[in-house]
Amino acid sequence: MRTISLHDIFEARERISKVIHHTPILYSSTFSEMTGMRVYMKAENMQKTGSFKIRGASNRVFSLTPQEGAKGVLTASSGNHGQAVAYAARACGYKATIIMPEGGSPAKAASINGYGADLVFCGTTSDERLALAAKMRDEQGLVFVPPYDDPYVIAGQGTAGLEIVEDLDDVAAVLVPTGGCGLISGVATALKEKNPGISVFGVEPTGSNSTGLSFKAGRRVSLDRIDTVADGIRTSIPGELTFPIVQKYVDDMLLVSDDEILRAETLMLERCKLLTEPTGAVSLAAILFGKLPETFRGKKVVALISGGNVALPQLAGYISAK
Ligand SMILES: *Cc1c(COP(=O)(O)O)cnc(C)c1O
Image (cartoon, rainbow, N blue to C red):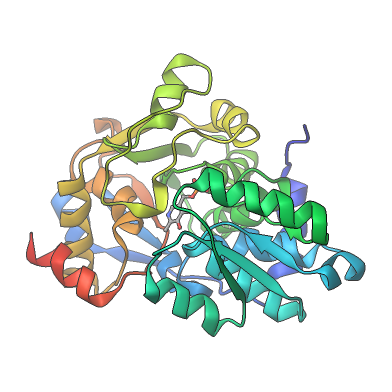
């Protein structure tokens, strides 16, 4: 199986730069005072479609031949990846089909519809949706765009890492929320290939820690129960392609509680006026609640704020609890 290089990430940037935002890196004096570190946030919650997922999805979709694209693209995620695939396909004039669970969120369905994609409702488990996706791929020739386990997707996510290392000098550590590990494997490749002195940490909720367990075990470990408010990273096992990259480049995996995630989300809104979804606050939570080693005192640390797609009534619940 093919892995990815810095060169692939540069190519990805060429391919997708017209469609994506080069997002800002924001400094917070409040969070710096709270922690004794110099705290920055890479604001991918301000990215097109509301999350970094457009980077990988557009790199995959823009790499298709016109013949492949004409058949249409397909994915089985109703969340940020589904929105990103819908957006990327529309940018090329390709048809997109997004498979959603029966009874999935009407807000997500509306937003995917808004990007002009077709919705197909199927079952309640991801296995059922993936089986339908495989069938549609085989029978109709649609191109499946995986959420993380794909070299183009990984390289696309890596462009966020390039922006960090190019925009900010003397970065000591970058913290990244991890689900299937597409984001962290791309970002860590960019950072370590540019500057091996930068430490890269993955962050997971205590109730969804498959990558941390796998990292310790030295092999991919699967969870049978997942329980976290961070709905963008409810993944039971790290990817086949992504996990070896995590093993190669990531310094350590950290854990945060749901309570810490929601407190970080609330603080970002209150102090920085940054609107994020719970998953987007996971990396900052690790900085604010003392999960980084003491050696980073006085140093520049960057939390990758991965997404901002949250329904406002839900947000009200998250922040009023804090
Ligand atoms: C998908 C997603 C992640 C995790 O990305 P992986 O590539 O699956 O590790 C983190 N945050 C948000 C907001 C996401 O949508």
